Length: 315
Image (cartoon, rainbow, N blue to C red):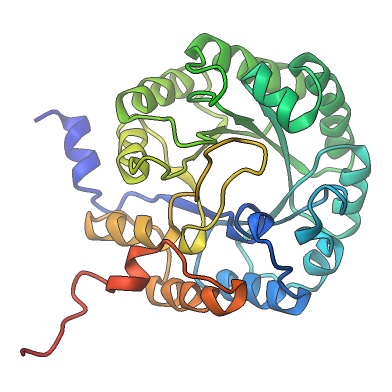
């Protein structure tokens, strides 16, 4: 067995940074409006678990995503924990202004590697998105706020099929060289990624930009979420988006289902000897509150079955 494989299967205390997106990516998909005070309580509970970053909300038009129409209030009123980064999705310069006014730590800019998905999601071409987001990135830098760029459909598009590695890396190069982006997130928007593909793209990114913060964002649509996380770790990745309870999807991507589940990924990585810095019991406790909050069951297998050594009395 290779040294790289040993590092994958035996974490040996290696730090993996978990970044929680349920408050934004999860709640934006819900048909019922989660009350503002409940959103704040959810983020506060997540802050206590030890996650590295929380994507709190999205500063989009309330007409576009009414579920997050309380973005400013939520971001202003959460209880911030030292060491936790509080980020938000921002689509335009007005969104930057709102986010900065609400004391957002990091701006997350989004466009797609796929022309069809970009047109469907953002109603413009990729080149037009890049030009518009360049202004957003500039406004963020001027305000001294860190900028991360999320590239949707990095592993495939539900309308076009495969997206080439060269296409993904070309866009990443522009974000890093032209915008001086602090970080890039490669997004598996509709769960089309598979482990060998993930390993190759992650390795190519890390070799080219070793000092740029790379995050992987997977969905578990086809049951390969955890396998993709491990494939990325094998290639040198150490940052992953995940969603409490496995909530999430994409309103503009046909077939998109929930993000990889935070407590499932942490549970697996901790068993393998990785250090996530997370209090898993607190994370599971927060996940157990979700069904009452959103009015339906959640995908989480850990909430349903418990941790591996949660034992039962003999019959």
